[in-house]
Length: 301
Image (cartoon, rainbow, N blue to C red; front, side):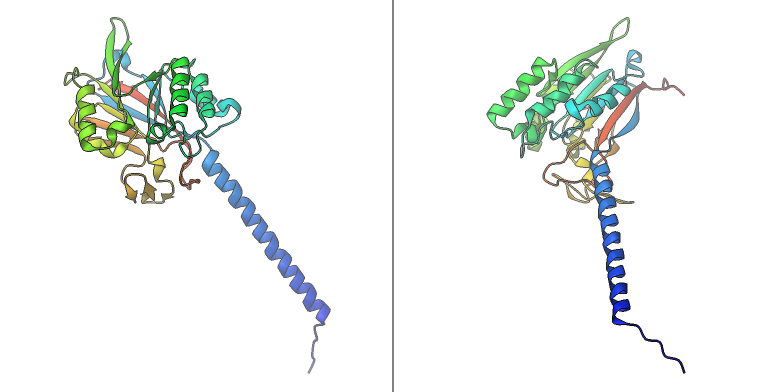
């Protein structure tokens, strides 16, 4: 019978080697996790939607809208160059900002205005407030609004503008509801009644409204297309289920991304670009939304 003996030195070396392997594995796992989370929170994606509506004038067939939502003063490169480059690549006819340009918890108006100033040369820009924009101090509110005005942005606080295209000229409505008017059902009804007072049933109206969960109200007043944000995509996307949590909707919310339909109204929800109370995203990259409008039976094949 043969016996083998392992010296204390050999056992000690194996322990050291084992600890090194564990340390290397932990370091690799940590590094990959950091890279993955960085990509999840900074890797821009562009989501494209085609909206077909019988009431859209043919002059607007193929009109491209780029939607930016929930920036929360996040920076994408120096002077927002990475973000602006992606917006420019979409060749927008119109750019809309659907709220929370600035984060009220850590306000940085300058970062938000860098983006606005850079976009102003690309296309007409329309803006509605989000809850964070309305929670800013009086000083920061003044700075934001003055900066938007200086850049030529159309600020819609329960207001309507007319967009014109083609020859002979055809028009559609661009309406924006101030987020303060979404605080209650009664306030929302009051604002929507004002916005749609001059709208005929077959007029095409785009409604910019930061919060998506009031879709039934928007549809009741005849909005053709609603562009919203606010939900941050549910913050963490659960495969085959959807978003995990969203403000004003709670856990497992319904309205977090994509296109929803109610009566004759289409709702497009952006997952947004930045974060606020919850500082990270998971399976939910920052999103630019590109919407192309088509008249019924006029969509290019």
